[in-house]
Amino acid sequence: MNSESEILREFNQGELRALSRLISMAENRDPKIPVILGQLFKKLGHAKIIGITGPPGAGKSTLTNLLVKDIRSKNKKVAVIAVDPVSPFSGGALLGDRIRLQEHFNDPCVFIRSLSTRGKLGGLSVAAREVSELVDAFGFDYVILETVGVGQSEVDIRKIADVTLLVLVPEWGDGIQTLKSGILEIADLFVVNKSDREGADRIALELKNMLQIAEKNSPVLMTQQSDEESIKRVLAEIEKFLVEKRELIEKRRQSARQETVVEWLNARVVEEAHRWVESKIQVQKNPYDVIVDFQKQYPVGSIFSK
Image 1 (cartoon, rainbow, N blue to C red):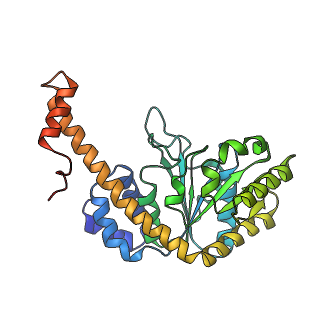
Image 2: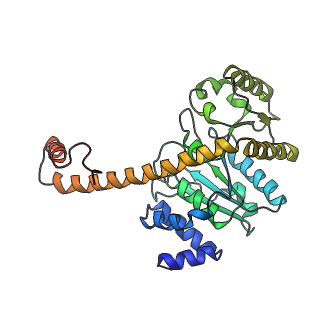
């Protein structure tokens, strides 16, 4: 399965092997991926992309698992893209395919893939956007994109997801002030998970007060693993947001397309710059001489002048 046409043929026939192969190519920044996604572009936009983010230990994987169960009860297909910390040895996803999702491993209508951050900041993998588009084009109804544990400024999920959930737990009541400068601003829905624990009502009230001050009318929902109804309420609010905010979602998708172009071109320019520097640095020991030579060869504005 080497040629683009053969991979695409199997992909369009619903072969999961082809989807997995393309995801691996996206992770490796294969230059064929923009070509392939260009041919799949008309298939994009069908899936509802749900972003789930929050600090470490908030129960994001548990919530994801319960949402998958609720989505499957409606006979819909769902893909889970779980971003994990990078392994210092292999460079791959450290936690693998998420133990909490193992009950769905044998379900042909559930696709689960872990991506490594590969050192990228922002809570996502470098290939998260392309992978989301690949599973969308493959025909999944929902895509759940779960970030690695995040703090104040990891807000990249907003660039990809149609709707973003921020998951917190009662123990984070004293930590809300540290979160508000970044991640609180990008969430569309707020979930206080493990709400049977002490302090859940307090953190929910603090969130509501902060949202009121910010004049942001976002729902604050309480969930716990043993309460199926609480999970159904979350999915219902997600669906409500997707219907009521269609124009906003379309703007986000247009912005995401621009981000895609910029990221790929930035990566290409950086790659070419590295290659040029490596060829010069061996000749000149003074690094500033290399910079001066580059500026002489490529004056500002000249690289894309053609």
